Length: 398
Image 1 (cartoon, helix red, strand yellow):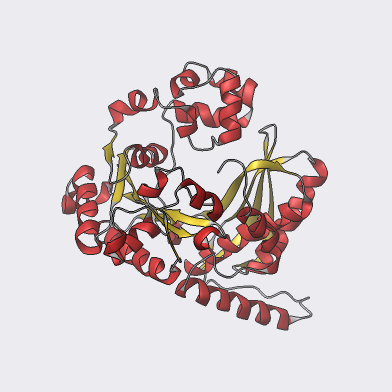
Image 2 (image 1 turned 120 degrees about the vertical axis):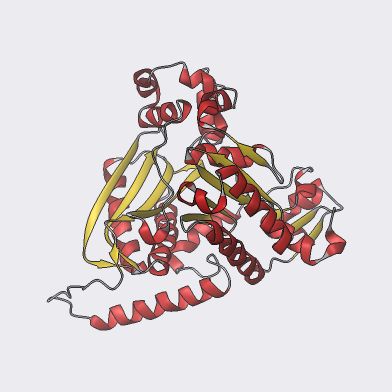
């Protein structure tokens, strides 16, 4: 069985814990008292419709009594590490998704800690007792179902979906609960008459593929409770990747390249943290008609350099844009064929500017130091900022 543990309103809950006078009050992290963008909102604030990435001015209008607090990323990272340490007491197979959520495979530790439900309750109790924070836990045989389950009864939820209840759990859910269905996808599915997961399951895979292409295959698998993916810690992963689905389709070349830069940074940092090197870089590219394409390039030698990952991904993106200039709804950057970081590395006979590698290594080390001490989103390459600034502006959807 697989656990998905999700800390509830993580940043806001830490602020309420550290400042008891904020308990029970609508707390907004970020937004700068009406300026800037909301980073997180307590559940009391969410009742007014406040959510992350919302302009602070909008949040203040929705809830005049909201308490705006400045974010303390160093504190959130510190608590996040404490949460991760609790996970590792129960299983070594932990796949972090972000600072405040992770998948855990507990199948191999049942003799030590009991069944999955017992482990889930123990983790939830330990987080509450040691850190005084709420967490929601979803347990299921499949990763995507465990994630849905953890969101099902928030905050402070605990939902178990056994093997024999997978379909009965999924069938009544709205289609937007499935991975890969955002606002645009939901509207398209509704136009086709798909409102519940059961509506998708009643169709054959071929029928959904004819209507929706590869995305239809993906939805059919989820609707039929098919998900072969396992929980993979970064240090055992055969590949690593990040992707973004856009609330509005993008066509601007500079913005698309900035997204790839941002994603490439995240992937390269994970490589270095896991002491791995990548042999391939892949760009995933989903057009506005939901057709998904990929291009891959092999690297020689293997690398964990942010600049090399970004430059390679930019070349692949440019190739895809030339052949498929349609609007883009999703971009992803991943690396594969990973090898250990201490594996022998063949130097190029034709490298004429070795100082470049030294300089880029120094830049990567500085970025990693800032990331480890404060926040993985605190320091970025200049090539990422066109996306980051756009991302901070008000957008439709989430």
